Image (cartoon, rainbow, N blue to C red):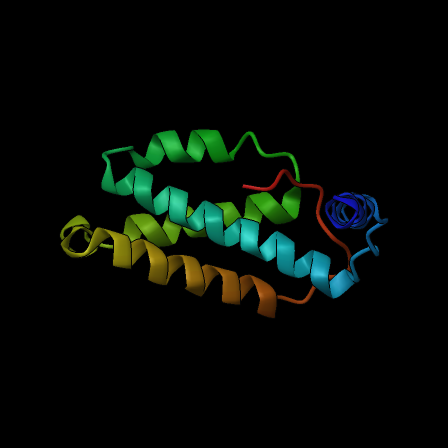
Length: 119
């Protein structure tokens, strides 16, 4: 019983331990993961009949310039694909595009982390 109690206390302490702040590189990687997730969502919307005008209308509400630039670029790329091409293997199309956009974001030079909400 004492071992179980000690284990519970240990787990509680570890769970409450203060986390180290992320480095700028780790923060950028997290941001780029969100950009990749947005690319996946935008591709999914395209595959499900959302019109480009609706996607652009939504994207133009984004206030952060960096994020808005990425999202507008994603929309242009997604809507440039023939629908038949991305519908052949929809899940694979989304996965590949998500990876491409994440990598593109990571490779993009940046001075500071944009103000964004994770996707």
